[in-house]
Length: 334
Image 1 (spheres, rainbow, N blue to C red):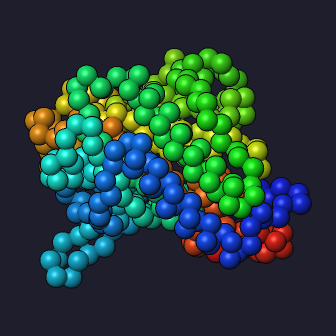
Image 2 (image 1 turned 120 degrees about the vertical axis):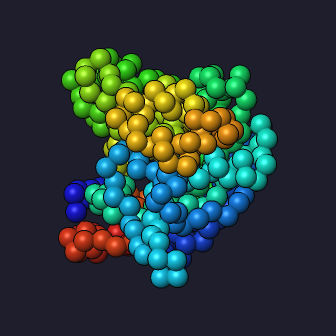
């Protein structure tokens, strides 16, 4: 257990039974809202991919995938970390066109994640991806897409709050700020502290341009070089007044084209990836231009249902200290 925070006097607003039914209701409402506002169709997605395809993401560059041998083929497969690359290939394969996209349930195992109120080794999110035009590869289109996602979240929250007599917590108005602007605003704070400060001040934030080196010589956060364009990406953050910190609900962005892929591979010392099948297709302009991201299902459930631990809305594995402390404090982990 890296850290566990349970506010004094915390009592879940919903019973275990109400929680289970509310999670299902929330997910159905939000899926419909998201699909409608972004023009998305639901598709099936893989739980694992072959390592030599280059389709798996290494996220911050150091996460180790869960890998296993396939008896029948003698080959190996990896549990996906996310579906950022697979979705782009799927859009081409399924003949999607500009203005339309897909979404899917993504389930992953991230065994290197620390365990705390917001982190589990089990990840569940809505992965979505949409075909765009060359003219839409710009910051204003990115901002408008973020506003639509926040709108879908707030519309979902309104229905859930009315059903379960809860108070809204997500601010519909989005503050846009770059990682460099945030560093300039809070130079004495580290990256996570800066996120907490801006989310507390503004409520809902889209933190943009993550991945490159800032003027301080540091990065705000690590990003893999081969899916988001580091100049056209960002994280959706909302302030959680129960935990007193920023909660990242989504990492998203306009994806790399051939030019930005080449530049970012070089910057990250990852030119060897040019020989992987996904990267070859992208460098040959054989894949559509896209925007996409992942939206955490359990994170969103926590925020909308007023929970303080991700284990209250998903089933995972926890260390003994977490299990013992949550039991003593009346926090019911699923």
